[in-house]
Structures are given as structure tokens and as C-alpha cells.
Image (tube, rainbow, N blue to C red; front, side, top):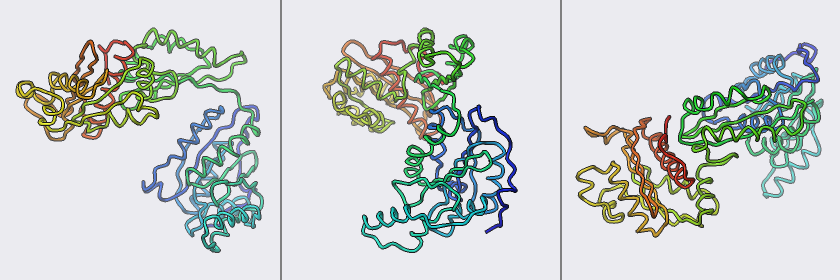
Length: 441
């Protein structure tokens, strides 16, 4: 292990105690750099820190090398007042974090008896033998504050050094989350002056980021100076997040909510929720409110639309079933698609999905049905139809609506976009909104 400088050798910048601290997240582990493990810890910490008014300024990933960890710590303290570290606290030889931290802060490892008892209790509970390496999990730097890990064996460690707080947590996500919730977030709120912050989220679908930005340009330009708008796009949807910081006036959240009516005037037909939720959950609420049942008829998506609708708890109250009609014979036998329609227009056509949706309504005995057929690719294109061509249909007791789009982004993404597109069409029809601008991306 590399020799590290004593605490006196670490120069730290001066920060204003009245300002919210800058936060840096540092993840440690070769598995992250090799791409063998996806870093979900940073996303969780960023979200939770944002809720209490703290902003992450930088995220760094470091290998399991003592010298590189030390260099990263030195760099982080130049940028941030709070450095949150995950990883490298396991019982194996490649887990170096607490050894490096002990030397970095000029300390030595000592046995923390409460943690040792906790580790012993865990092994007794599972009736497993406890090895010496397991006991070593209770070793911590003598000058740290130990944070109890209620769901694991490696405790968290809090260091307050020359105005900078360093917190080391396990890399196991559920252990890190518990430590953040139980200890780190409350301590940060007590330790620093953090101005109140509010988030208001508006969920949209059916209009791409650039089209949305154009439609609400004047509204965005008129936002108060303390309210910022972020566009967070995903498959066929864009989450609009308003972030407001305290300005000395009361009821920040109420004043932010008062901005939404003007937003609805501009893009109301594309808003499916004014909270963090999914489009399938919003569809479920609409179906329940109207007392409707639904079924699906799918080809290229292979049941993905049905899976998304049934991913919502309580969906059995409105979802009756789905038919995956991948082969033309099944489209005819199970959904009543006419041979003449398939011969004249093909399986991927508005005529075919119209008959699929109407057939699903009859066969499944539902109020509303959606259907989808497409060329997911990379094979299957014809002289008249490109890969990525998708056809959608919505049918209820009074109407059947069809749409055709070409959204070629590769097989996996074509399938995802196809499912999102038909859910967007369904949501807009249930809400009574226009679909003329549906799926601009």
C-alpha cells in the first residue's frame, strides 16, 4: 500500500459556512471501471441529496489502488465540502478503502466493539461460522465517527477534516441506501446551512424534447429567477422538472404550482401526470375513473404492452388479457383479421391493426383495446415498408383510430418505442386529447 501524507499535508480551500456545501461522490472499485457493475449508487445519492437542497458537483470513479484513492481524495477536497465515498469496505484483500482512509487521516484501525457485536449477531442469526476476516469488518479508523450499518457488516465512517466532511459507505446498494437514510442525510442537514429547495415534476409523452422546448419557450423564459427548468427525456417521454430555491418569500411550493396552469395551456394534451409516475400508472387511473376494461393485441412487441400495463399494482381491476398474434394465422384465427386485408395491405398496416384492435375487443370482451404490429428489424423490410415501421390502433365502442410511424433505432429500441407509442395513443384517447402531433421525437 502506498504511503499517504499526514492530515497536515492536505491543503483545503476555504468555503463559506453560510452557503450550501458542494458535494462530490466518489465510487471505488475496478468492477465499476471495467463495466462489470453499473453505478446505481451515485444516481440514488444525487436524487436524495437534491431533495434536501444539496447539489452534486462531480462524480468520480476510482480503481482499487491506494495511490489513486489518495489522489482522488486530495482532488475532491479542493472542489467540495462533502465527499461521499462508496465501495472497498468488504472483507477481501482488494477492499482497501478503510486502510487508506486511516492512513490518510493519520490514524490507525481499532476494533469497534458495538460493530463487532452486531457482526456476531448477524452470523449467529444465519447459523454460519464467523471467520477472522468477518471480525475485521469491525475495525475502523480511531478518529472517525462510526455510522451503524443496520443491514450489513461494514459500518459507515464519518470524518470531519479541516472543514471537509468525508463519509465512507459500503458499495452494496441496499446497505448504502440505509446508511444514507438513517445517518448521512440527517447529519448533513444538521451540519450545514441548507436553503430549502422544492421540486415540481410534470410528466409528458408524445412530444420530443426539442418540440416541447419550442412550445413552452415563452413560458420558460418568464420563470422566476429562483426557479429552473430541466428536460429529462426517456423512451417517448419527457419529464419536466422545476427546481425552486428559497428566495425569502413564503410558500415556495405553492408559488411553483401556480406556474402550471400556463404550462397546461401550451402542452396540456401531452401532460399525463403532475407527479413522478409512469404512463401505465396514469392509464390505470384513467381506466379506473371511467370504469373501463382493456385488452391488448400485439405482434412485434411480443406482449410488452400487456406487461407494462400489468406492472401496475391493482391492474387486475381493468386489464382482462392480451393476445400475442405474431404469425398471420394467429391474427386471423384469434383476432378475426381478414385474409383479404393481409393480402392487400400486409401484416404491418393500419388496416391490419384496425382489425386486430376491434377483434381484441370482441374476443376479450373489453371496453377498450389497443393493437400494434411492426417491423422491428434488422430483417423484415419490404420494397414499400422500412425497418422501424410500426402501426398502432386504439378501439372503443364508438371509434377505431390508427397511426403509422417509422422510428428505426435498432430492434430493441424499435420495440420499446412501439410499446411507448401505443401507450401514449391510449392515454391521450382516454383523456380526450388530440393525437395529431403524437410521437414527434
